[in-house]
Length: 427
Image (cartoon, rainbow, N blue to C red; front, top):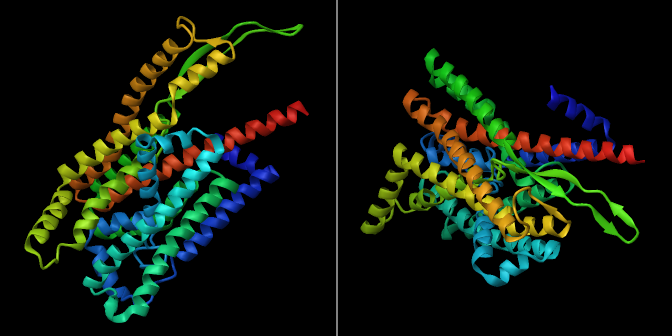
């Protein structure tokens, strides 16, 4: 009920209402684009190809159903996510970029600009890969050097579609509610959920299997909410301070360290990386060069193996949870801020010992959060393989992202409502 009350309260607040309506408007634009097909596409053949490929189904998840119709947004935000991962890795390894990231808003804007520029070649490469695969599958038979006009039209449309989605995502982040890129993926999943449910009901008449899906869905939702809400509160005591002729009394507060501060980002990152090797290998399985064909077929077969796939998925989710937490929470900065304002953690000396203490606590709770998130990410896929309901493989990932985005967005809404109630109180 708290969630519905927060939504009602947000709609009563004019500026928040405008933000919500703006976000919904951008999502409507995105859903419209997902229904604009590329030229020269054989839709019947496309349905046959996608129905027989788990990889393409996962790619379709990221394009919000755009790939199922081979629309102008068929690549979704995948190239932008990959560009973000590459830039994040480069930030940690190139000193010039690391220094730039510490320069406040100016540095962040420059890094965002580099990420946008890097998205263009990545989108072009992925667009060529998807188009070549579709041409070999007779979905776009006219694609190729022989028909240069159509080929350039398809590639430019795919790149432009990704850039438009990137722009829509940034607009949502800036003028709407929540993380724009997560919202684009969220809208795509919600948009194709009725199709996923109807497919599951068509192919599965086993009541026990359907009941298992429902129970797992509820458990996954409960687990994600539990992870998102879990936090360790570190008490901070402030001493009395004298400024000029005035004395400011000390007080106590706490630092809320979330069990999973990374949210759904590790899952989105993990799937992006998971898709890349098999996606690239898929293009070379029909190669005339024997060794290239054998290696590509081996990679596709390995990623088709449930044990290998799930193990890698689990490891990637855990690694990215640690990676993202380390990137966003810097104990030295927090310790310096506490010390600067005359604060201390009871029983811990200010400065370096405080930073070490915070690092130990964050590492411990992130281990628990990362393992839990990894198990929750993999469990629906494993149950899907056991029950034979393959649509659950997508359902598990979809539920993770949808619930994560909803919880994070509601927390943002509540924070903004709280901020406005304080402002009203001060006035």
